[in-house]
Length: 183
Image (cartoon, rainbow, N blue to C red):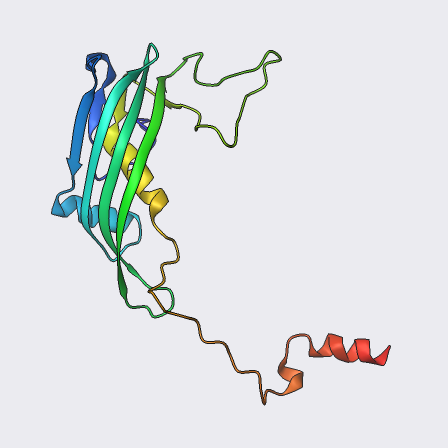
């Protein structure tokens, strides 16, 4: 999340892990107009009308951090059928664990050294570098995962092409059907 090779999130909110209180830390991230415009551009949306992340950061095990909370947003997208603007409200739960670079807990291994991955279990912890986690980037990641890539307005349906009266030679498999009939 906090690596220097990644582009900074429009809603960046960095937290220094070493000063994180043992009782935890609450963070509220409410996007400004400029940040909402940058989010819309970054995620190919017509607009982001609102973006609010309510997060709780707490110590996890010895050196890790767990981020829980939710992101509420209102976005405008283009319907894939009608091409009309479509307003969508998102309410996205956030739950992620972060471990410092080099932590032995980062990749759970079995007795033979194989990586343990439970497809139904929680996600593996992510790694943070430099003692800093960008809680805003975490919130944006969960926001992005909840955006419908093919939004459709209620009741919008694709019109089926009418094949009645269509010349049989124009059908894509007409030639194959003719060969089959000759056999």
